Structure formats: C-alpha cells, structure tokens
Picture 1 (cartoon, rainbow, N blue to C red):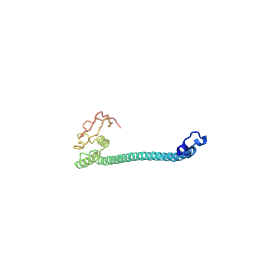
Picture 2 (cartoon, helix red, strand yellow; picture 1 turned 180 degrees about the vertical axis):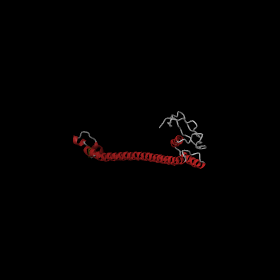
Picture 3 (cartoon, one colour; picture 1 turned 90 degrees about the vertical axis):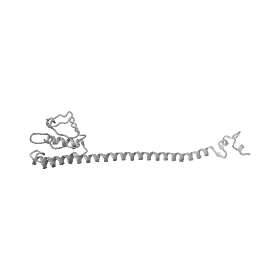
Length: 194
C-alpha cells in the first residue's frame, strides 16, 4: 500500500478515519492545545507588561507634574512671605522715623534722604500689589500729600508701573495733592474710613 492509500479515508472503518497520516485527531488537537496555551500566555504576559509600563510612565509623568506644581507653590509662598516680611520691616522702620520726627519725613533733609532710600528700596520689588500697599501706607501716613508745613516724599524717577488703585479704599480722603511719579492708576478710588 502506498502513502496516498494509507491517508485516504475511502471505505475504511470509522476509527481509521480519525487517523491522519499516522496521527490521531485527538493527539493533533492536544498538540495544538499545548502550543496555543503557552503562546496565549506569552501574548497575555507581553500585553500586561506593556500596559504596566505605560501606566508606570503615566504615573511618573503625573508625579513629575505634581512635584513641579508643589515646587512652584512653595516658591510663590516663599516669595510672598519674603515680601510680607520686607513690607513689615519697611512699616516698622518708616514708623520709627515718623515717630522720631513728629510725623514728617521731609522736614529734615537727612531724614528725607533716608526715607527716600528706604521707600525706593521697598518699591524695587516686582510685585505691584506690594508696591500698592507701600504707596497706600505712605499716603495714609501723610507723606505723599503736600501741605503748607511739609512737602511730599520725593518719588521722582521711581518706576511705579503696574500699580493700580482701581476700586481701592483709602481712609475717606481723595487723592488730591498726592505726588506720584511713573504710571499709577487711580481710577474709581473710594476713600472711606478703615
């Protein structure tokens, strides 16, 4: 009998039909199953590994973004604390000068120079809000108004860009006779007692 005759299922009993070229259908299915199972497990493992790597990269990116935001908040907080500390020091030092000189920083030329230097140093900070607070303090302490007994503190050539007094409340007075150099905005200022 030739190989073709052995493998052709013509006129043979049913148990011989399940044999194909010397291999039973049962053995062929087991062999295929044994090959597919590890292959499927391998593909699943690769898929899970890639997914976990992607998740890890996303988590790392998110952690980096959160850390960067946290550092930015810490820098902003430190800068605000520094500005607040400088403002408080400025208020204390100018307050002491005002107390020692009967409420005037411009009557004595030496005191006027010291006060001008302190004011200019304080106004060099990049925060317009900080500078607005300084101008407001100087105004409320009477140092930016011209009166018969004193001149306003000299702020000539001081950059006041970005300072705005829009909708600001300043102690029930108008800003008449206030001397400001630079670009300050006093639109819609309401002056009421504090």
